[in-house]
Length: 78
Image (cartoon, helix red, strand yellow):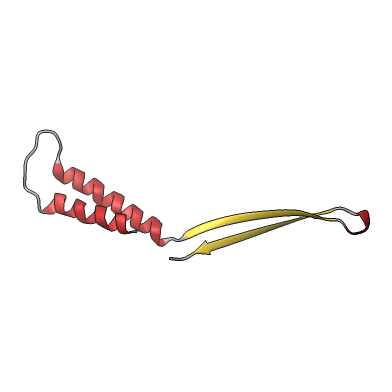
């Protein structure tokens, strides 16, 4: 999430504080793009991580084979 904040801050500086003119790149547009990318990274980082594990095992008492399928969903919140 720290990279997202960094991108948003650099983008805001390029958009609102830098008054230089270049022929190669439009700095305010680049700043807006960086702010959007930073916002998306912050949003993605705040959702947490989801993992899904599927466990399949066979249990066979007395020669009978049963397939048991278990789905575990875990969510990490940072």
